[in-house]
Image (cartoon, rainbow, N blue to C red; front, side, top):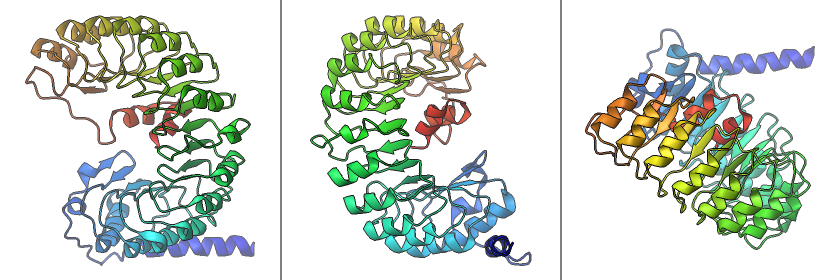
Length: 426
């Protein structure tokens, strides 16, 4: 009972800090703070690129609580926030808030130590913030963090090992952080469900540590110059349901290897020099739900195979060599909710087919194609599209704006698919 009473006092203290006095005037010189409405999306407050300074954090939090009390997710990405601003977050933290994106600032070890002390913070993105192993050690003492992105900082493998001590952690982003055998071994024996090791120079490292990791479901190893054989080692873990192997060297051989793993439901293979041969092989993997093959060498022939995947709900094929026949084929595919065909050769005929699609496409990106005004108008006249992006075509009709969160994240936020939701947290 005594512990419960103390715990209540802590939360009461936090609420007291976060609530401004009713007679206190809350002032800010920041334009974003003085005009908040465009920055609120459902329960998310996005104040990225708003030129926020440390002095802006208190009025930001106070006005959010006053005017938008249901917000539980705050983004202040790419501003000018230092350790002092992070201290304001700790001191005035709204109890309801669980998520904070403070990437691309300069809070350093001192700032992240402040954030580590927030008792209700569950998901933190502090990437690119001049954080070293000392900051990682402070975070390792957290008892509430379940999601952490600390990539693109100055951590060494020692700091990575410290982070694996966070018992509640299930999602960890370590992009652009070098690993060694000790840190890979620690990660392989952790309880992580999602791990991002993109651009971490693991090409020549021992990846067999991950073969028997029971909890690991999603793995991002993009940008590591991995070959087909390295990808095969990771796919041998039957618990892994999704792999992002974009920007590697797997080619058609790697695509053919991955087509044999029925445990894989989510595949991101952008920019891998995959041709119709590799795509054709992937078309035989009936377990795929989410597939991205942007920036490859696909033609209309590949789409015939991919359109036969029975459970595919999300398909991204940007910047390939696709024509109207691909759009026509995909317009007939059942169960497809998200389709991105940006930067291809789609014209009016393909647009008409997509506009009259008999399927369930509700999120469509056909930007930067060759669609004329009639085709664009046909797409806009279809009320089924929750999100439609048509910019960069021949037509001069004003485009529907992209959602604040971006097309795929907005789509995943509405989905029940756990892989899609986890992917959106990246």
